[in-house]
Image 1: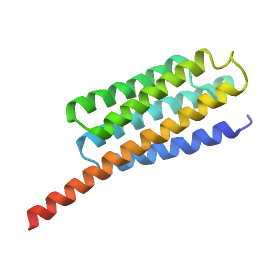
Image 2: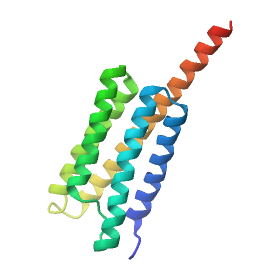
Image 3: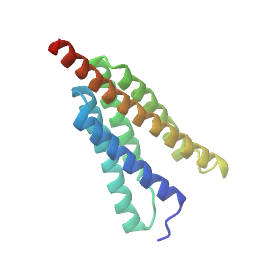
Length: 157
């Protein structure tokens, strides 16, 4: 099986998603940890499905139903955590995840039939939104770390 540019990009984004999830889990407060766990778990499920699909059918693509389900589950987790913990960082991640879900729907339903350039643009947009989600999770974690440091400094003084 030939490994193309899309597979390399996906692998790099997967590695970054796992690192951000681990960072949020280890250093974040409860909302960041839960968001990192949900995000990482959905990425892991999707990647396992891609590997199984690639080995079984020779196609490097997540099944459409599973792709929509994991995107929707991540968005639902971000929505719940945003409402429960009133976190602006997770709200921003929710907005980016919703945008990514929309682009994924368009890519999987209309992207193939509308020309050669649109699927690549949609995929590029999805990767940009993925980076935005990772930045939001990192921001939530760094914010929690700063709050913890300020509380410790105030307690020590």
